Image 1 (cartoon, rainbow, N blue to C red):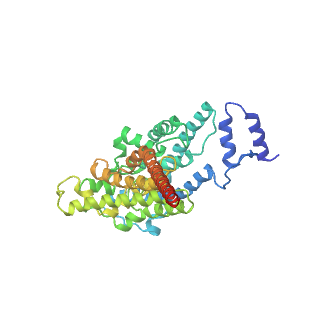
Image 2: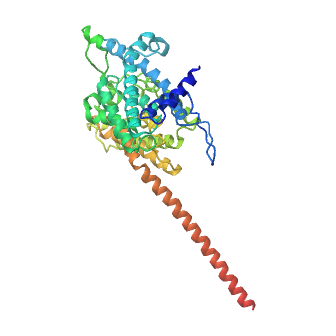
Image 3: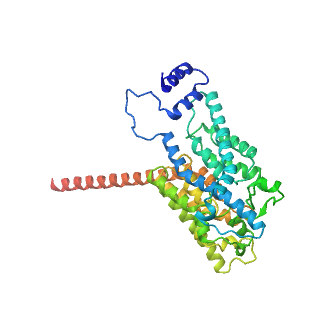
Length: 422
C-alpha cells in the first residue's frame, strides 16, 4: 500500500476527533486535499495560501543564506579588528567561505529552528482547542522572525517573544487573515520593549568560543545607524558598495539591499506583493530624508545637536542601511495587515517610509523605526481604506445626482417646448 493511501486511512481514522486539525496540517503539507466542490460558482486558480507563503519563503531564502555568510564574516572581522587588522570585504575572496558559512550557520539556524518549532506548536495548540484547520500563515512569519532580530538574541528570549507574538498578534484576532498587526513585527516589538538592551545593536556579535579562549567578549562596533546616532559618522569605514551588497553589521536579513531588491522584484513579478506600497514607501523615506538634509544645510540644526548625524546623512542612503528596505519589501506589503484599496496603498506606503526615517532620526537611543512605523500604519490601514471607499462613494453619488439634475433639466425643457408648440 502506498504512503498516500496509508495517510488517507489515518485521516479517516482521525476524522471528527480532537486531534484532526493537527493531523490534517501534516497531511496537507505535502499532499493536496482530496475534497472537490460539486455545486455553485467557485473561483478557480492555481495558487492558494500555501503556495503564496512558499513563494514568499523562496524570496527570503537568498537573504537568509547571505545572512549566514555575513554572520560568520562579521565575527571574524570583529576578531581581526580587535587585533588591529581591518578586513576589506571581497565576495569570493574572504566572504563566501566555508569558515564564514559554518560559523554563521551555527548561530543563525538555531534562531530559525526555535522560531518555527515554538510558533507552530502554538498554532497547533490553538487549532486543536478551537477545532479549526492549521493555517499556513506562520510559514512566512517563522522565516521573517530570525531575519529581523540581532544575531546574538538568546534562544529563550526569542521563544518567549514568539509565543507572545503568535497569541497576541494573531490568534486573539481569529488567526491568519483576521489579524490587524503583522505577527513578525509584533514579536520584534515585544523584544524591543521587553529586552531593550539586547535590541540596541551597539555591539558586534562574537562567538562564545572566542570568549572561552580569552578573546573579546563583545567588540565595540556599532551598526552604521549606531555610529550616526552618536555623531561618529566620520569613524565609519564602510563604502557605498559595502552598504549595497551587505558587508555590514546588522540583523540577519537586513544588510543586503541588493538581495532585498531582487526579492522585491520577484514578489512583484509573481503578484504576491504590491508594487504601489513599495514605491510609495521608498518615496516617503526619500521625502523625509530630503527634509532633514535641507534643515541641516540651511543651518537650522546645530552640528552639536544629537540629531545632526542622522539628519545630515544623505537622504538616499537611508535605504541602504538598517532594516528600512527589508521592512518595505517583506513586511509593509503583508496583504492582511496593509491597505486593500489602490489609492489606500499609496497613502499607506508613503507614511511608512516617511515615519520610518522620522523615528530613526528622533530616537537616537535606538536608531531604527521601520517596524514601529509599519505597526502604526497597520492600525490605520482600515481607516485609510474606509475614507478611500467613502470618497469613491461620495464621488459616484455626486455624479449620479448631476446626471439626475441634467436629466431633469432636459425633461423640463422638453415640456416647455411641447407647451410652446401647442
